Image (cartoon, rainbow, N blue to C red; front, side, top):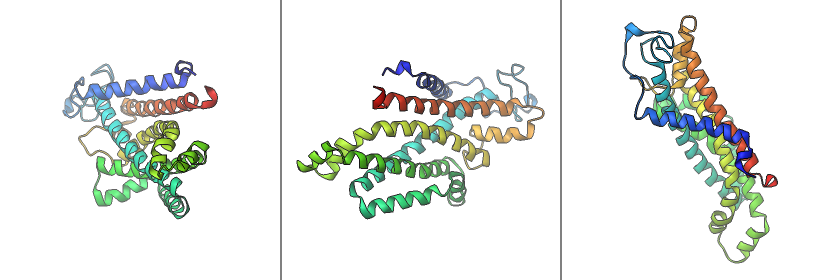
Amino acid sequence: MSASRHGSLIAGSVITGALVAVAVVSRLWTPGSPTRLAIADKLKAPLVHGLLGTDQLGRDVLSLLMVGAWNSLSIAVVAVALGAALGVALGLTAAARGGLVEALVMRAADVVFAVPPILSAMLLGAFLGTGPRTAVTAIATFMVPVFARLSVGAGRRVLARDFCLAARAAGKGQLAVTMQHVLPNIAPQIAVQVALQLGLAFLTEAGLSFLGFGLPPPAASWGRMLADAETYLGVAPWLAIAPGAAIALAVLGFNLIGDGLVDLLDPRER
């Protein structure tokens, strides 16, 4: 089935594409300096000073949003990539080995699932300090069991199919069967999960920054913009509306892509 027939995939791609474009452009140009303080221009309303106004330190809100898009996207992509790589490797190993190895992987996944990423970041922050490393580690740690459990279930189903049994009978080793037959067949499911987890990672990164465990000042972060805006909701609501809407749109975009990929890659739809 053509991708053009999936409205959610198209809408999600447009939203996410715009997010990526803004993030890339911020590396080359912003309408103002996101770190320059101008107390005389603080709390200026949108269109009075810049498109989205200024914050409590006189910084251009649009510039902060643009740079924050790059920072949040970088952390989310790196965290999901690490979590997916390790989780898929563990899951496929458990599916191929079975027995004790599978039981250990699944029980470890249950333990990690029991600890929310926010709490993990707080614990890691006590040892590593706040910053992008803490945020990436906390989010990636939570992503590992997600991909491990997906890979175990999907991998076992593929390994039980005739072509995998035939490959083993032909003398192919466990690693060769896994890489040549199992991984390509579960790749669509992994792709869907990556899209969905990117939205969750984006939201988690914003939550960590809101609590002070994300990027340290003066680096721009949508979550910390929300935290800073809390004090000024009565006099400058635009400080909360702009990053809040940006976070909601980013998460919506990734979720729409995930939903669209479910339909697009479903063999029953083809």
